[in-house]
Amino acid sequence: MNPTYLDTGNLQISVTEGENPAPIPEARVRVTDPDNGQVLQEAVTDGSGQTPFLELPAPPIELSVAEGEADRRPYAVYNVTISAPGRETLHIGGVEVLPTGRSIQRAALNPARTGGFNVRNLQLSPHALWGEPSSREPEAEVKPLPDPGGLVVLPEPVIPEYVVVHDGRPEDRSAPNYWVRFKDYIKNVACSEIYSTWKTEAIKANVLAILSFTLNRVYTEWYRGKGYDFTITSSTAFDQSYSHGRTIFEEIGVVVDDLFTTYVTKEGISQPLFTQYCDGRRVQCGGLSQWGSQALGEQGWDAVSILRKYYGAEVYLKGAEKVEGVPLSYGGQVLSQGSEGEDVRTAQMQLNRIAGSYPAIPVVPADGIYGPGTQEAVTAFQRIFHLPQTGSVDFATWYEISNVFVAVTKMA
Image (cartoon, rainbow, N blue to C red; front, side):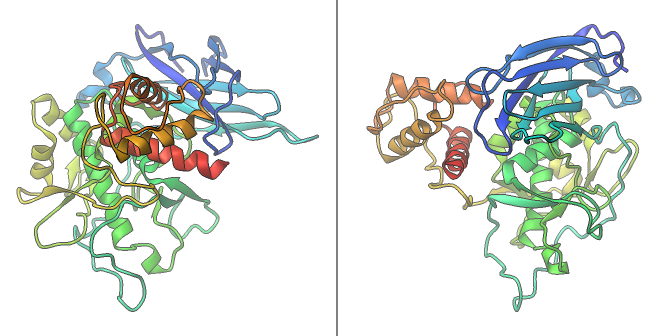
């Protein structure tokens, strides 16, 4: 039940053609109260398949930033119904809205089936800090590597294009496997595990722990070495909370975009540290306390200092050199007005291809010169894909352009 809330948050619905990134314009969206069915907001998607950010009631911010207030649900939940001509109707329950924040709910509409039942229901799981507490079995921070006679051990960690998420316990053969883009997986887990209302440095510390946990599973081939055909599970008894299709908090997504190639490690080891963590309130563990990290963030601690408190003074951050699935790695220089060269031309060519699916992005000459038109195209791209609207191509924008370019090219 949603009580009467005085604070507000914002929700945007992004509607696409199934799992493809192609947007669906003029889809009709209705947001209702799950308790009484009252319609709170209605909207129609634009040419990018997105509604405006819709203002909705949300609980007081104090509930999501202070551990002592954690006995009351700190976010509002809503039902969302999406429909479009020639497509199924999708009902999503449990969409989360935090106060002062911006929630993004993707809705993937499949084609309507002739003579079939064209209504699909999706119920999202409660947030991990609010739902049933999890208790992972302790594991070593540094894992044995796969047998050289079997799986290939890479000299350095690589950011994979996809992770395969087993949506259940490892031994549950009935649970589905989802192929999820690496960054999307990290955003999903982070938005399932922590709140976007937390201090930015606390969010960064938790995202880095989630990244390192995941990359340790990838690098050591933990589950494939045991004979399974997936990378990681959604079971918090073994791994991290993952809810397929869940609401993404924009503030957390921005942090992930900036950090997704970075992990925690120690001198003398080649693998990302297995950074175990727990909520620190209902469950205690030998790794990072989520609520404890937020308290330290409130005290002004930076992300690295928070990580060193829980994992030891000798830990440090390292960046993966290779990102799979992108045509060209980031060159290290921010591109802005006045920049020239092949990196600018690459960004222009990729943006022009993306503009074929997202007409709000203007097409520009691919001349390798970063002028006002390119800045406008970059700003439009950043607005659509929830990046800071700087008009410059930095690390986060370069890789998001690359990811979307690859997706729309594969779609074609």
